[in-house]
Length: 326
Image (cartoon, rainbow, N blue to C red; front, side, top):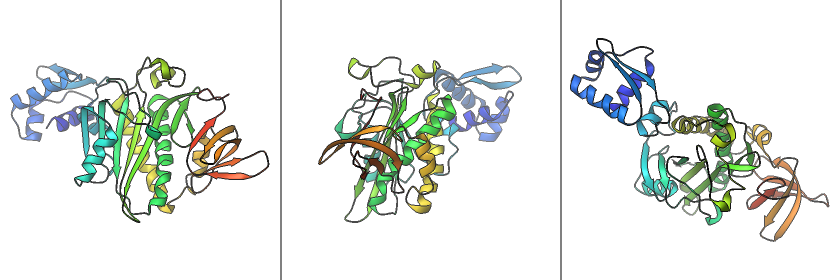
């Protein structure tokens, strides 16, 4: 009932009478009043005027399941939403739900991660009330080979969501970081569970430093936040909804070809690695070269001094001028 009342208030430009809400929902005035009080306690500014009803004045940075649901405009992404005050890792929680049969599109969002994860076993600092820590579930029918490109699809979705909600132009550092002014604002971790030749499920985890205003000393020079970059607070619920909407759009394009033929040009336009000197930490040894963007398989094309062009499928890639690589 709370979600429906919130939706009615958001859809109306004027006051909504208590009687109208009672008739729409088939509940008593007391029940409506209790929900209004609950919404006010959660941070919604709701004006109550005798003989006129209720009007939503402002939402602020209300961050909960009701607010996110009210903003979602997707067909499937986020269809099942779990909002947690605290969790070890949203990726871990989605895995647990997946093992119990959760449907594709299940989305987990948390206020705090006490064991947030980055790539290659690194930790991800995830304090309460400052960032967007979210993961969602996929159950694709394609072969595992194609799954490595999902991180790139997610990066495009996060870049668009940040641009739409915050007006901030970020660049993508292949394969999984969003960067502003040479510092990281977002990271993506994609994990997969497979059988011999098929995918059981994929978890796409996204961390965005939204309203963070200070970072631990060890990452202070390499991390930043959307608020620090724009000077304005970020509506985190709107950001989550925008990520899911953009994801659904780009994912559908990816599914048409199961590669980056359709998305490659748009991705390369956002790619910080393109046309710059990069340092690749490959299994056989590190080397430097000039990046020429990604190919149809989502691999980074790096040309070395001898003219050889290598297709980098995975691994650490440092871009000159970013994260201390000079």
